[in-house]
Image (cartoon, rainbow, N blue to C red; front, side, top):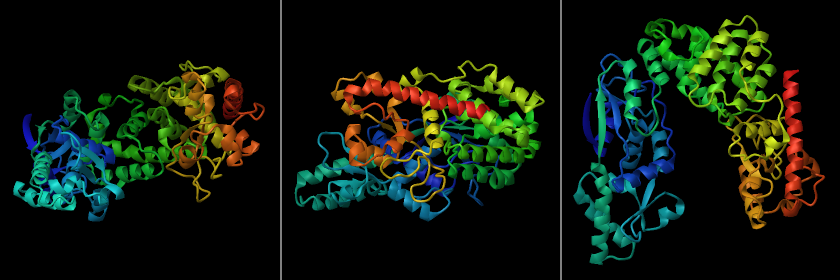
Length: 539
């Protein structure tokens, strides 16, 4: 293992030329535009931005998308930063599929700097129409794409002229100094660790480096191991399925798929218990079972309103549900399985480091002879109650992820609609179809600012009984800050519309003096609806 220092512009050049590439197990670029902005500012301020892990291996010669080039090193950790460096300087990485898509990314990830910032620290921000028209704001890319420092003279001259300060020597000197400081980002050195270890060792090496950024998991490296033996499977089977599920709202880590596979094949989630030859010779044989089970479960979850895996307190909880579907298929009562699934999420059974628990439950699924027996075995270790209490809905909504999910499911089941747009919660605003990318916007029925003005306790303000789900535009622009009595009248929200959100219509008026009465009554309504919902799933 060797340590080298690579300058930012060297990393970009190698990514463009293909001497740096990415293997199959790397995910697509997922950084937000504000993360690229923060990276630019960190580089400018000489903050540490983490080191890269490069894999120098001749035994695995299948890059992710690039074809026909000799790749000397692959990026195991640092893909997100490498793409961000390319966005800041402009050139397209070799592995990026289309120039059109890259050009769109350049526009979206355009970081600008205010050349007239006060003090020594420059202000960095994302481009918008106002900043692009303001002569004080300059695209960082226009500065960093200059390959020679002498080119900054003309750029400084242009900036001073745009500001109406042409001929002002002091203004030119100041602009040139600031441009030079920003341009030095090109030469910032990034530590890069290069390893020639076997594929199975890469994950362990990475974990011990404890780097920032997107963490490469054990499962990611397993995908690479399978792809090394069967590149066609990775390109034609695994990646298309995962991309399709992302479009359906289920952006799942590789570990969910791989541990579903080992759960179905071997009854375990502990990947280190699986012999190496399994990945090379048997893993792809079980993939059709995984693909079918995952597709069926996602379809059934959509029917019940879970249109995005982000609604779930734990995505790991999907693994035993997939394994159940695979084993029992048409013999499975999905409603009863779904009820167990909800209670397991309430119990937090698969949160955090859950490999041991997952392995136990996957072995129970493998060894059971009937669906009824399996569900009883899976229910046994759960410590949560069978019923929900009204007091549960007086807890803080930020802490109670499961009960937030339950409120959303009750609204979906109750055909609740947005109070302004009248679109059904969980359905697309323009067509009467499921919206696969739906994410709830949590709305405080009594706005927080309104309650604070009336000296309500913060814990009561954020109680689950004070939140519901509305569209983003309604929550942020239409109802925000107004007391319910006002927005109900303004938007002509009927008692029927309120009742579908379990808003008590017998507590009037809906003003601060009645807030605690409202909380108690809505908590009672939610608890009754939740227990009826869970009972119907059981029966």
